[in-house]
Image (tube, rainbow, N blue to C red; front, side, top):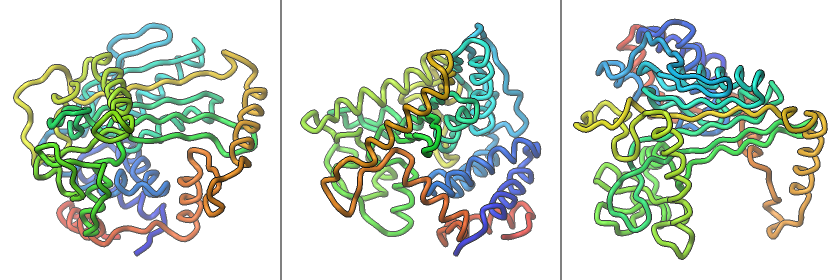
Amino acid sequence: MKFHHQKLRRFTQSLFEAMGCPSADAEVVADVLIAAELRGIPSHGLMRVKDYYAMVKAERINTSPQVRATYETPSTATVDGDNALGPVAAKKSMQIAIEKAKVAGTGWVATNNSNHYGIAGYYSMMALEHDMIGISLTNANPLVAPTYSAERLLGTNPIAVAIPTQNEPPFIADFATTPIARGKLAIKSKLGESVPIGLVQDKEGSPSSNPGILEQGGAILTLGGGGVDLGGHKGYCMTALVDIFSSVLSGANFGPFVPPQVAYLPLLEQSVGKGLGHFFGAIRIDAFRPAVEFKKSMDTWIHTFRTSKSADFANPVQIPGDNERKTETAYLKDGVPVISKIFDELCEIADALNVEQL
């Protein structure tokens, strides 16, 4: 079934208002989740409403937070998310980074005491309208096994970078530092599908094709797989760097100490920081060269790669962000598809909160 994106956004906002969020915060959360749906990333969209709701009911999320900077320099800040819904803490943090970049040329914000923040690309893209490069990182639940490990010690830890252009669509790289995210495994599981070998392993460290293996103590592998032959150690490095920038720098929990972002898992006995962590950057282009010159050069860069010879006629060389942009264009026109099981979950939550159904 398909729904108009604005209808989905209003419905989602009403759910979070009914959970006790101020209207402005509920609007931010809804905007982030629907942005994920529009860009074809349902693993970080409406599927997350159930998790967020369960966390709110379990009193693990503060629906009336006071997100604030606790440490600042002219170009940097550390932000305490006050255990907010992740999108609320993250959007405020990125706004601070942008404001600092306006003054200092670049702005950098490390955020602690937060929760799952949706798609990383949403926040990096906030910088585009200011002629800035946007960067967004976050750590996540420990579901990933480092190279040669049978233990889950890291998160899927995404990186998103958005770069403005003149006439071409902006360059938007938004990717997990693992070959698949937890949410996408959940989608596969809901659809009854398997996953290719090389993405996950069981609790003993053996390869698996079961998308539900995480519920049995299994783990996601890093980019490149579990060994070094295909560069799994490089994926491990990327995942580790995001964890350090997001948590060790901000004072959040790192690695295996990141608190679970689902209510059915108990809170960890040991904590090494405050909540979950993010990291944001905003880089003013004209701090390096005139913005128009840079954006024209980016157009040339994109044109060069887009028109390069493809090894497969059916699959031309693409630019990061192309697939998501095409999906968004189609969904804005024809409506956003919602998986039936997720629709049923939303209906149950709406009933529980006395919110009008879709």
